[in-house]
Image (cartoon, one colour):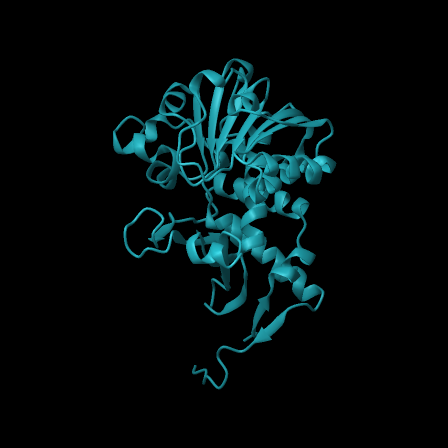
Length: 340
């Protein structure tokens, strides 16, 4: 039985490009559409993000999955913490991924998951937008949030689309200016720094929210027909009225999206249920469903995040590491007696 391969974040960055991640996420969405991937809902451990106890200003999710097209099983243990972690200057996201041979149950890989989490989140948006806007490859982007996720969203979009213009808004103007100087290589046209939130939603094809805002800042009247809205942050970000008035609601995982994130409050009130959901991203990926007459419709798309995407990218990293003799092996079962 093979030893477990351990991979550092630095090694994963050398092994996996954003183009790789976009392609892997595309294949996995198709696999989900064909019901070949098994992805239970996330299990949440609240470490003080919303709970009063313990007071650590964070959360962790357990995200298991089996990815059929790769014949791999695994789990990501990931979350975000502020508080002491922020005081130490550490990134908000912390994550580990474990991969398992699903036939015999031995663990074949253990690796950092933060880089994979960030890149696959951007790749989810890029692929979902590709499925929704099937015949459009030039886009204008409105982006809320100029942090790490704003960067990975933009990088992933540039792998699939030509970005004619990107307007970015952040509550810290200096963050937007830094984003503009660092991300210009991914945008064919101009990057415009918005002075107020509404500016980032004017004359755009897609609105992406990647903030930590607890306010529902994106207004219903700001979103014009022909626009897709991706609320990707930890909280709702868009006001109830837009969700209720959207022509189509698209999700990556039905049960998960109804009970977590942007739809959870309206679902708890009985105003948004499964019957209000138009399609999953997987159904769009295999063209089981399509969005017709898109220019006259407003769509909200919610890729809240599934372990399957992380496991798919992690499996690719594992295979590439073996080819290039990278990583460190560890025998967790040393001296274990195998009986017949």
